[in-house]
Every structure is written in structure tokens, then in C-alpha cells.
Image (tube, rainbow, N blue to C red; front, side, top):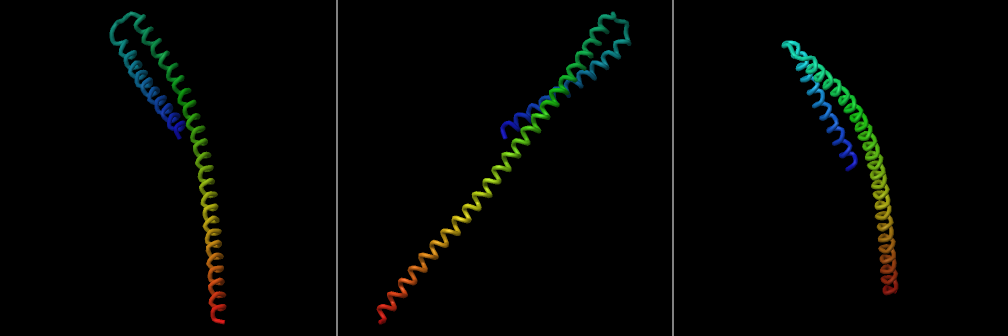
Length: 129
């Protein structure tokens, strides 16, 4: 359960990182478009363009991290569900064993009661003779 929660947290964190990167990329694209409104040196445009290229690469890396985190969540979920099934199977076996134990206990009690009644009946018969 803990591993599943950790994997889900990593997935959420990866998605948040990608969201922020995409948001920054959109702002950078707008900023680059606005650079053409005024005369500026080409180096400023190149720096902005290089920044956008770097952001796109980081977004690709974030996508890969999200994919890995998704696989980890799926693996943890499968492991969790398998453990849960095994636990449920053990619970069912315990319930069956407990029911069998109660059944045997009732049989033993009934046997002892039968013996007691039989003994009491014989004693009454012997006293009556």
C-alpha cells in the first residue's frame, strides 16, 4: 500500500512539473512573438529561442518520467491487488476452518451431553429396580 502511494505521488509530481514547463513554454512563445514588435539584437531572439528549445526537451523528459511513473503505479497496483486477493483467500480459509472448528466443538458437546443423559438414564433405571 505504501509503495502504491509513493508511486502515485511521483506520478502526480511528474504531471505537475510538466504542467509548469508547458505553462512556461507558452509564456516564452508569447514573449518571443512580442520580440518582433520592437527592434532588438538578434542575440536576444536567439537566447529566447534556445530557451524554448530547452523547455521542449525538458517537456519530453517530463513525459518520459510520467510514463515511467505510470508504469510504476500500475506495477504497484498489481502487486497490491495480488496481495489483497491472497489476504482475502486466507480470510476465507480461516473462516472455513473456524466454522469447521465450531462444528466439531458442537459435535463434541452433543456427544458429551448424550453420554451424560445416557448415564443419568441408566442410574435412574438401576435405582428404580
